[in-house]
Length: 183
Image 1 (cartoon, rainbow, N blue to C red):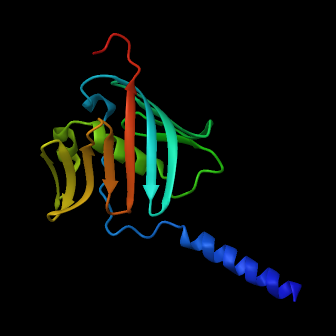
Image 2: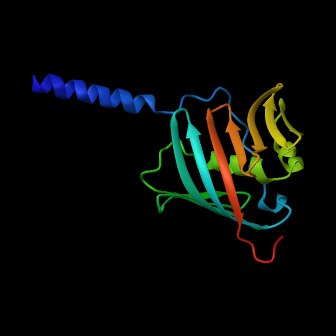
Image 3: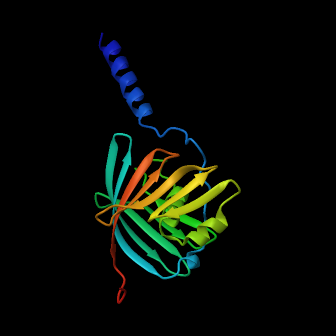
C-alpha cells in the first residue's frame, strides 16, 4: 500500500513539474543582436522586473549598463544573482545560477532588452523578410505578416510593459536611472 501511495505521489509530482514547462512558441521571433553602439547614449539603470507567465508571477531586480562597447546585465531574485550577461555586439557571455530555469535564455533576454530600448531604425535594419516594426502612440510592436508577436507599451505610471505573445509571457519594467549628471 505504501508503494502504491508513493508511486501515486511521484506521478502527481512529475505531472505538476511537466505542466509548468513553457510550451513551444507559436512563432520563432527573430534575433536582433544589435550593436551596443546603436543605442544613442549610455544607459545605467536599476530595474524592478515583474515577470508573468500564465498563473506564475515573479519579481526580479536587474542592473543594466550599456555603453558603445558593451551591454552588461545582472538579474537577481531574492538577493541571489540568476544570470550575468555581457554582449559586445559579437559574442554573448553569460554566467547562470544552477537554479535558473533553462527556459530563461540569455539570447531572448537580450532581444527583449534591445526591442524595448534600441532605436526603431536599428531594429528594422535587423529584421528578416516578413517581419515589421511599427510604432504608434507610444506602442511598439514586432509583427510577422501583420500579426503582432512582441508588443511594448508604457503604462500610465511610467512603467514599461513588454508582452511576448509568441511565448506567452509579460514583463513589466520599472526603471531608475543611475547615471551621473544625466537628465
